[in-house]
Amino acid sequence: MSGARRIEEGVRRPDRVTLRLDGADLAACPGESVLAALVASGARRLRDDREGTARGAFCNMGTCSECTVWVRKGAAAWVRRRACLVPVEADLCVLTHAPEAT
Amino acid sequence: MNASMSYDVAIVGGGPAGMAAAERTIGAGLSTCLIDEQPRLGGQILRQPPPGFAVTGWQSGRLYRAARALLARVERLDAFDFRAGHAVLGVGAGHAEEGGFALSVQPLATGGVERIDARRVIVAGGCYDMPVAFPGWTLPGVMSAGAVQTLLKSPQVLPGGRIALFGTHPLMIVLAEQILAAGGEVAGVHFAQPRRAMLAALGPRLPGVLRAWRPLLEGARGLANLRQAGVPVHFGSAIVRAEGGDALEAITLLRAGGRERVACDVAAMCYGFLPQSDLVRQVGAAVRWAPGPGGWETLCDEGMRSSLPGLYVAGETAGVAGSDVAMLRGALAGVTLACDAGALDEVEGARVAAALRARIARLAPFTAMLRELADPQAYLPEPELETLVCRCEDVSARALDAAIAACAEGDDGFGASAVKLRCRAGMGLCQGRSCEHAVIRRIARASGREAAQVAGFTARFPARAVPIAELLERDAPAR
View 1 (cartoon, rainbow over the protein chains, first blue to last red):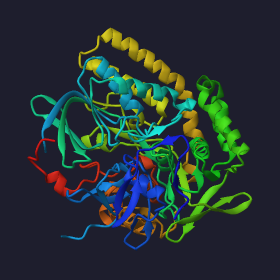
View 2 (view 1 turned 45 degrees about the vertical axis):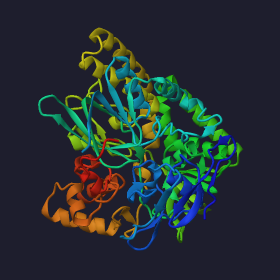
View 3 (view 1 turned 180 degrees about the vertical axis):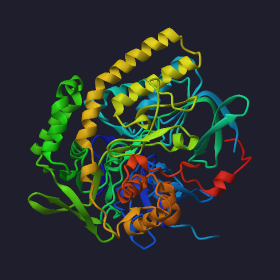
View 4 (view 1 turned 60 degrees about the vertical axis):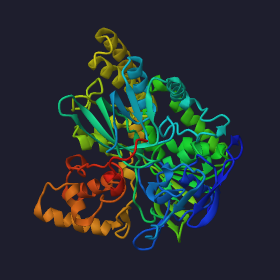
């Protein structure tokens, strides 16, 4: 866990929705990016590299692709996206690892 | 590919340059499509809070005033098509008979690939933080200054409890103030260069710089604020390593007085910025190695025309110079394009363009001073042999050096692509954006060349990583 947090003073946000992250529930604000929700929750390790070493967010502007995750809206198919470019919405599932073949 | 849409102008990038260009092309009556990956206009410097958020006093600092005024004007325009949340994967030749360009774009929300046709294109892709490899830099918690800043600006998230800043760029002062204003703790601001080097860059240019005095004043005021808030600001304090287990716990810095270990959960690097140049390189426009942090800036004439007829550049893609210059260059590109398209009277266009160029010239001394003052080249930390240089393909400095040595046996003039083929550096999801400058510099050092003499990675479609299934998707229903 990090000391990350949402800034509350002077900020009004929409009501939280529940994001399904690696099978667990995470409260997040609609419109903020999935990466912002992950960072705000204190999550730091977003993936492992080939050596099994932890990796986290790096650029937050779509350039480095370190935050690439799998996302699924409702019953749609899983797609790979940069988490910094995916807005949080209801019925969104996120996996930090590849979904198992079904 | 799905349905095609056709425009007089397609502008890639909704930051200050792209917005200023759009304002001019729309004003000239040209059908304009503005494309950006982000959900809202503004670019990185004005990364807006998400829709539905209300933030009191958002970006109210003086440094953002002109860009904010532009944003407000462009958001009121309704005569253009803003493709938010669309990634441009490629720019290629358009119809065989009609000419122009065809852009491949990926709507991030719905997926697939669509085609946008445009008679002319302005690439205003902006820039990104120079990624710098040193021991421990891949630990979660080590990030770019831009990442911290955009998390603060848009979703209003503080990424850590104690944030340390290091590098060579004075933007660190602005960022440190923003962290404090957000209620965060700054665990130190570490300029790698000594104070006298910064003063030496400032001194001789002072008369010209004073014509653009606002940023200087803001910098001095910011430094005073940080000192008053008790934030340590060090000069000649260079990062050696980042430490931690599964995430960052501390950074170690080296300076004249010895080593200092600074506990922090975020450490943000700020060594300057590289132009986003993948699209212009992909379509074949001429570029040159940029000064300071490096990367590729697009060559253009005084009207922002690239070497390819019909392709214009604006903002940092044409060379990193800050948002004030980016706005002026964007407007200039829009005016030139409108004249070339016959949508603006030549005489009127020339008059407006001359006025814009005069304003750019007034800012030039400040831009040149900042570039020299912030130049990271003499202060870059050294990776160890086991340090990963390519983050995507996990290529260490050792593996990179072996590939460079192998290339050198066959060919004196080898470039970054030859090295990439041997060790996979630059072959990953970021398409080489993170490691290219480092690969080029390592090749230059090993072969006794200047970085500018080393060819970069061949820029290829797609500019962003996109799943094959989405590239192949055809005849999907209209969205």
